[in-house]
Image (tube, rainbow, N blue to C red):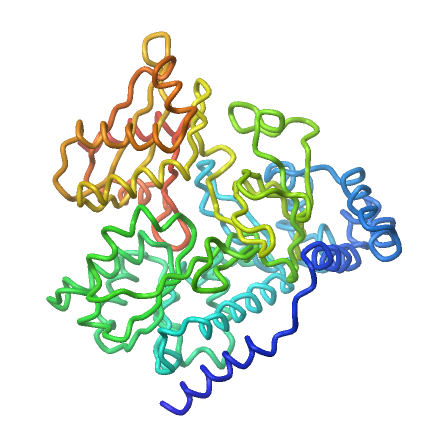
Length: 515
């Protein structure tokens, strides 16, 4: 086994050394675009939106002709427009709707923006694309000099949704992590934990119990999952085995691959569960595709996957393109990868090998390196607060929580913010989930001060229209119980960072009923 690990690590290093110099970003994206429209030209969507002309422009046109025509012919779609106009037919069993053939799998999204889950098609082409990008990410481990060859012989714990998918008329549906885990390559199954049997469990609490009971028999080196659920699992394991840290149970745990939400608010509490530092690797795997991943140890952000079934467009996230509620204007400005600027915030549009076309995924990103196409996720188009021009992003919230947690030496497990009325003006109401003792007034003052440092607009509005900030401290379990009541425990589900409209009323009613 030691020989196997050494061979794998050396093979990974060799792969990284001999990998051909990548083409520039625009050329990669043009090639991906051509493949997508060639493949989908005879679908109903392709016939409706003149994909034949787009194919010709991509193959024979001038540099940007294909993109100008794409913007001209194909409208931007949000989920409702895409589903009602096209994907609903695919869900009902029609073939060749937005991608060739019949779609056999649909991912149920985490649905943090709206209460209801979304049905996102997962085609065979998309499953292969996700597997290819996952392998590429594993190959990047060769760049981490601190990781020994023995890591490649250890177990890989992937904590996701059930692989026992719901069978509907002509298709299967479930969490994307469950769909992908059900299709793990045979050569990887010997390393994969929790194994096929536990992975099929649909009851999240029971799944965590079963993993906890088996944990002592596993030699885990690599953990993958949403931070909140991984932290909860590790705490259960530590308690079950009467251990001080997770390394007492898994001494060879070296890597945590996380995604779905920013890890920074969780870091303070997470690292209390470790005996020594581990390597953190960030990923951006959405229900619509594997969008980006951290590609080297010193990366400031995640590298966009520019050459594997995804075509990207970027909408400047500003008042010219979005309403105060985060709704897209009729004719927004859209840019390609070569037109973006570092430090600016963009909403993401994607076209994919699952048959999404000019699809507004709902996330906002910022480029930290245009040359390397590296980004950070800053929030959601509708998960921000701007009641009176304060423009408070989820990125600001995450950073403030991280800084205050460190100052007060507390672990904040979850949090959410609601914008509310205050007399004739406005206020923010924070709900902070922690099991550590903390004075709500001190927490409020520290958060308010940090946000003023991080966001000039916020600082200005705190002197004018944003008249109050309130903090309610709650036990962490309150947030988990809310998720449970919504049927959204585990997998890729996340608690919404911003509560708006009906969610505020539902959340307040839940708190009143569970005092």
